[in-house]
Every structure is written in structure tokens, then in C-alpha cells.
Image (cartoon, rainbow, N blue to C red):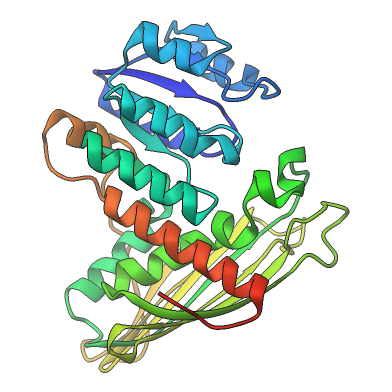
Length: 329
């Protein structure tokens, strides 16, 4: 499997981990996605891992010359969907940073080209693959809490020092689509219900001079069958915290509750005597299952349809926050 990587502004590490785990794929080329992007760190990591890729300044030229099986697209966020379209037009399978588009119009165009070309596509919603979320999902899937009625999800990050493109909506996209999309994805993944409407709010106050970047946000969703779901998002995790992120989810069913907190899974329900900690299970390897799907072996945990739908949900939540009104799906 020949793989090219475009950019290093997000979670390209998912791809590197999957390629290493595969052991049969080659990183044939690396390229900037934008002339101002610095990919020296990516180049160093790939070479230290034993690969000898050709390095390009122009990603389209790289795709034309190397004709990879998969393009990993992870540049400045506003360039990702455009480059994904260029890859798909060349019948190259796409593994793309989330959100897959920064506007609904971009998303519609991406879906249009995907439907025309029918290549494989997945996005970097890698938290699905973490052992604690994978375990919690299995508990729900195995009916340990009955019918889901309520979900609450949290994404909290340290702000740190962010690149310049984070400071403008047109290049960053917003904190709900960038950070909150993970939590929105959990809601969809756990519930298997479509979204009906959303009311959201966000604020850029106290963002440490990061321009338009929102540092707090909340989303309130109503799903099919009157399942209710909420998300809280912030960049205010203190620098002294032991981890960069604090990811949590609480799924309330008719017969129990599953919670993920501090990378641990807890179950309270019909099969427990009080709350019980559940040992984590190892799930699929991020990106490796996409390689397998491209080879015709199985299905990737994050499908193209999931990628598009969860992106749409995050963009509509951002629109709700911008307009200060309920948005219907």
C-alpha cells in the first residue's frame, strides 16, 4: 500500500501508528498543504521510523507523480476539503482530518465528488478507538443499560500556544467543529440516532489573545425517539493538569448508566452491585482498519457516511451558536 501524507497540522500520528502496525505499507511522499506550513517535524518522524519518502512543496504534484493508494490529508483546516477533492478526482482514497469541511457548502461539494468517484474515505475521529471509549460502546451495544435516554459528553483541553490559523474563523472553522465534533460523534455513535435539532452557544472571551477562537461552548441536541444529549467544550484546562485533555461521557439508559471519566469505564445497572469499574478492552487500531478496508478486508470503524454526518452536525451546532437560535436538521 503506497501512502502519501499532506500536512502536519492535526492528528497525522493516527496514520503513522496504523502504518507501523500494518507493516506492509510504505510512506512514499510527504508534502506541505500550504506554502506557510512547516512539516519538518513530520519529515523527521517518518525518516526516523525507517521510511524514505520524497518531499514535495506541491501536494497535487505529489499525487500526480506518485499515484498513492491513500492520501492522508492533515494541513491547515481550511485546505483539507479542497485537497480531499483533488485526491478523490484522481481515484485516491482519503483519510482526512476532522471536520472534513469548514462550511456546509464545502461539505456538499465533498459529498458530491465522493458519490461520483466512490473511493474510500474516513476521518480522524480517533477517540472511538481508545480502549475506554471502545469498552463503553461495547457495554451499550450489549444492552447493559437498556434503551438510551440521555447522553452528556465533555471535551476539555489545555489552550497552550496555537498556530496563527486558529485565530480566524475562516481558517480554523470554530471550536465546536474542531474540538466538539468528537463529543458530537460519541453521541451519534453510542445512540445510533439521527439528530433532530440543536441549540448551542459559544464564547471567545478570555482566549489569551487568540483572535476569534472560542474557548467555551455548549450544545443541546434532541435526537430521534426524544433522546436528549448535551456537550460542554472548553480550552480552559489548567496547565498543571496531568493530561492535555479531559474527555468524559455519561450515557443514561432505562436500566443503567455507563460513564467514561479519567480514562476509566464505570457501569451501574442490572448486572452490578453498585457502580463497577469495567476493565478496558483493546479495539481496532486507528487507521489500520482503514488500510484494511482499502484492501477489501472489512469496514473502517469511522465510515465516510459517519464522517459527513457528524461534520454536518457540528457545523449546524456552530451555526446555532452564531445565530443564537434553534437549528433543525
